[in-house]
Image (cartoon, rainbow, N blue to C red):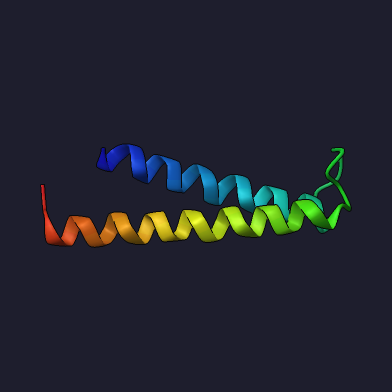
Length: 65
């Protein structure tokens, strides 16, 4: 379970950063380019991913192994 949560956190952060870049128009070549909705969706994904990563780090400190 711990590894899965860490992987999901990483994917959410990575996808969120890409979506933010596309929504802001920094990464061209997609239907998402220049659409601020995708920047907000990406930001939300990054926030959720960071929260999951923080939970994962905290749970590893409490229950090592």
